Image (cartoon, rainbow, N blue to C red; front, side, top):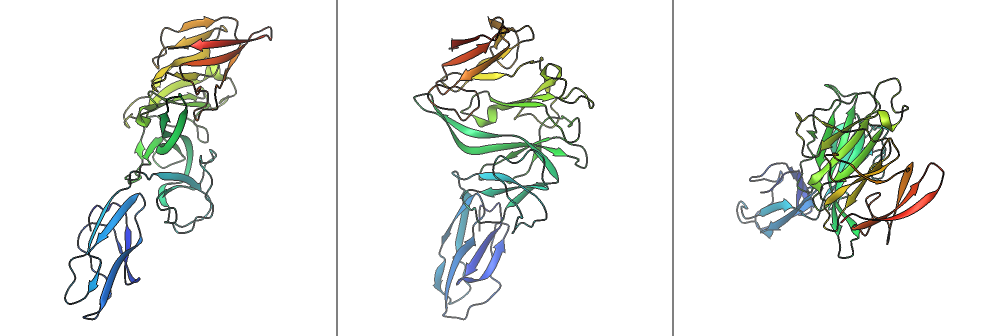
Amino acid sequence: MSGLIRPITLQDNLGDDLTLSTDGPFVFPGKIDAHSAYSVTVLTPPPGLMCTVAGNTGTVTADVNGVSIICSVDRGSYFVPFNATGQYTNNSPIYIGPWPPPTNGANALIAVATNNLGAPPTTIATGLTKTIGVTQKLMLDSHGTITAGALSTLVYATEAATGGDHLWAVDLSGGSNLTPRQLSNLTVPFIGLLACSKLEVYKNFNDPDSAFFILGLPPDSQNLCGSGAASFNNIMIRLSDSSSATPRPLPSFPHRLLPLYNPTGALAGFVTVDATNHLIFYADETFTNPRVLLGNVTDFSPIQAGGVSTLAGISSTPSAALIVTYASDFSERLYHVDYR
């Protein structure tokens, strides 16, 4: 046996089950009479792996040493996370909800592999969790249309956990051992509430590992999010941050922030409305030197062109966008914005 990173269950002659968790030689618990046939097969393949068996059939004339099982990562597979609520076991969850998980917490965070949906789920974390986001492998075709591929990384926060509440990232690729790693040194400020606002952004959506999250934290435990977006403590956390990394503070965004992408999939900047009712453009995630595009704008809405993208607010023709602005006199204007 080689290449094993998760348990596998083998059978001999459709019985005599043997579960292995490590590489190396293996011996079935039962014995076969001399001159009898043997047939070694995989009963339960490891989630996220594909295994090939060689020399698995024959007739017993002595100890059989020629059965070889080699496992490797199934590159086309990935894990899908779920919240499980109530009492459950790995073999029988009481409830498995749709993705994305509910944000009001659950008793456990579990995952199943797309290449083995019938296998028992793997537990990622127990206790209450809140989903922050999930990165995906995104693709851009020649027409500029964005399509979503495999899930890449889950980011979640623990709630009322021993040792403090933090953000965690879990690799969802087929070869992952699903071990969470702490993401930055942020401590969740208030139990039951992590962020008043959150935005998932890709530095380049061809690279899911380039993602970062902009979180609007509540200013205090009294008003929480009720005091409005202008009072939020905005921070940036990158998917690559270590447990010792301090979240980067960002300026106030009184209105929502819209990321823009160019045809290569690279981040082209951000559009928002500032406190003086100007529609402004930031060239990158440093959020410095804002450029004023329009005045007397109280709000704006992007208009999708040619279909709805998988990323909220991103045009499916990413070299330009259509934006409707709303003024203080309740008038509306339509603009074509070219940000190439």
